[in-house]
Length: 155
Image (cartoon, rainbow, N blue to C red; front, side, top):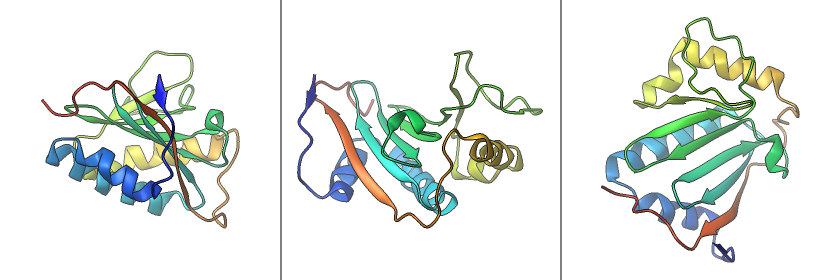
């Protein structure tokens, strides 16, 4: 069951969620979020501090079902999810997953986000998104859910 979402400053809340993780994971996540924000002007960030992971989705509007990407922190690694990833052209076979909609890559380092194959996948995902991002829309951070029970965030 999720706790009621607090009235605290969302940025401070996200910082507190990140602080629960191993410093290396938290640092990589902060750099990845900075890079995603630069690449995705006009996106709304929706944060879910779930039982298994911390997920930060990048959405064109306030409908979670329209999310295009998410950065998800686990105890030992971070994934970048392509939430509308099925059918993306992936000649380098970088995308992982076999579901009906979502694909992902593991973020080994911040350089992964600058890999030309990953940039191409991200551009294709943006081009094919159900609802496009509006770069003129102000950035917004929304804490959507905080699970009352969580797995440990560090090993």
